[in-house]
Length: 271
Image (cartoon, rainbow, N blue to C red; front, side, top):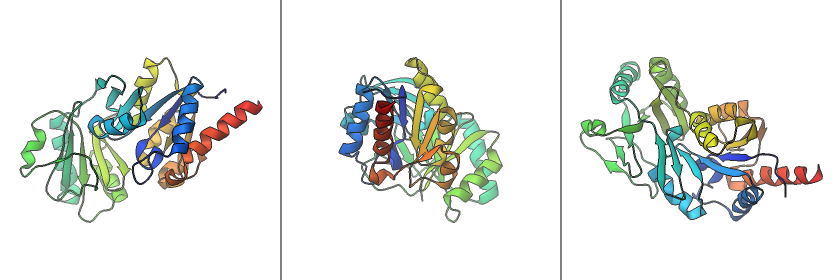
């Protein structure tokens, strides 16, 4: 079978993963057909490596993955971190103080760098239920004692969109602020995005933006859609992403990735 793209880039949560955090048989088969046709599949996720590795292992995934919102390029087959970018902690502290000066106290968590980097959770921060490991810290100073990939922020009253916008207004020239999912607003190194991480991973494979179809569901996927030749938003995607997508597919619960991949194979076979 022929396939019109050399690279398929997929977000994880809300995209490749169903709401129960599994990947359907149909989607697994569609991705297996893609790789059998000679194309590469790269997972591109906001999750850092420690929160991604078990999913990749379950998929039997051997290739490269872009984790931590683009900060990490990870070789799943070798369980090896190839590149990792950290957040300047002094700059991050300044950014947080500026945001809190505008909106009041924040609840915070932080993702430590490395293959086994813990997620530190501060007082009042709401962690989503699930198997992902987290360490609760009583003293906020613990957050700054080791290199970090990113900081998570929550506000007791502002919703995700309002908090993201307020934070960008306050510190947009110091750091990147992205909304990556429900209850997940992140502070990242300035200039970092899924697009920067994906371009690094693609370059290692000798592939380009023009070779790429990308799937996502949240505003943090916007740079990836800007980089890829074709961006596909899930039916459950945030309106900001749908607005810049080339195409909208079925939801993550209804095999939206497989729907598009199967149609691309059918179209290629008729050509």
